[in-house]
View (cartoon, rainbow, N blue to C red):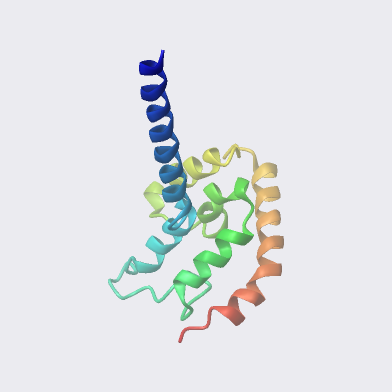
Length: 141
C-alpha cells in the first residue's frame, strides 16, 4: 500500500505545483484586449506615418490608456470595442466582415441595429465616465 501512496502523493504535489504555475502565468501580462489596443497604437497610419496613439487618445501613453480601458470597459463589450468605437477603422473592403466578426464574438448580431445602438450607448456611457480620468492620468511624459 505504501508504494502506491508515495507516488500518488508525489503526482498530486506535482499537479498542484503545475496548476499554481499556470495560474500565476495566466495572471501576468496584458489581457487580449490590452494587447489588441497596443497593436493598434504601434501600427502605422495608411500613409506610413506613426499613429501616435489610439484614435481619440493621440499623444497619450498608449500602455496607460489600454490599461485604463481594460479596467473600465465591460467584459461583454471588449470583443466588440474596436468595431463599436472605431467602426470605420478597417479597410472598406474588409469592414463588414471584420466588424461583424467582432460584434458576433461579443454576442451582438451585426444585422440587429437596435442591439448595436444599445452596445454603442453603453460603451459611450462608460467612456464618458472614464475618459477624463484617462486624459489626466495618461498624459505623455
